[in-house]
Image 1 (cartoon, rainbow, N blue to C red):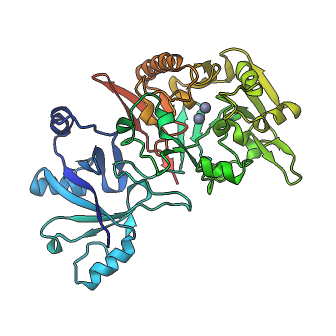
Image 2: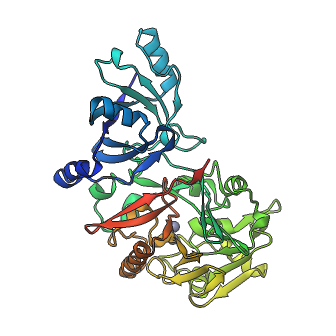
Length: 437
Ligand SMILES: [Zn+2]
Ligand SMILES: [Zn+2]
């Protein structure tokens, strides 16, 4: 069998001391942590080239890691080998008399399948086998070990009187270089591993807001495009917005307001559908569609630079159906939900700021498409005015940190939402885990 070192797990009793060595002295980057509730453990990944280190902190005194620390003190806890098929690997090992802890694979973090081998067969090292398990057909396992598997999950949060549900219209791929502008590939590739066509995986995660009314912000790429387009953009909608809305207990009929951050195809493609007769009509039959006037003007008059992203079929039928509402300025769209123009990506790109009961959240769309885009200068090559993106992002991030704003990332393949932090000038996202599959 082919087994590749995925990561080395290290049990940590003093996380601050661990940071002083791995982060400060070695200068490695420690990723946002992930809590594995079933194991009562908090895992911090540190990419180290082809594989990574995983610092493991106990989150309860009766957790396996706490017991390990009590018995052996901090130190090497396990190594993890990636295999293509955990079940087959276990059969092979069993046939050779290897003592297993897990007879059959069990679910690990991020939808992976894992199984442990007993140290008595491995010269004293706890060995974990791991198989990235795409939960849905068409979801490819990421090639880079430090990067977790993509997630289709919906993620629910409550902010005061509002319920926020990050939904999903599937995944697509864009050129990694274009996604990171002037940032050299050796810097971005570890965070967003490119495929053989240099494309990186991106999600499309619209946000449903339920309050006095039910709103959806953006709607993914939809399904009007042809096979050539789907191939170029690696469009994977094996699970899409309808599935995701159903998981949230909603249908397209429930949506009363559709709000556009901007009208690029990966945000507005899902605004319309082609019906059986070939006619294109609004996707959400009861909704008013709210679009910023400047964005509407730009999108309906694309130029040579912008026409690759603006497709009239995605939004012109809304005007024809009489469901289009244009707004001119930053304003409240429904109680607790207002828009703010950021410009940058497109001249009238807007983000959505959500406030209720003293809490705040934000849907930042292409102002900060993924968690890899936290630094001000990691700006997409697609942005028409990168300097404007930088200053709008800078302002937003300062505010979000100050207010403890929950930030929703529209294109991150793994992290739907998180809180921003800044330490020694370095920004971090602390991902939330209130997701349900
Ligand atoms: Zn865009
Ligand atoms: Zn986008």
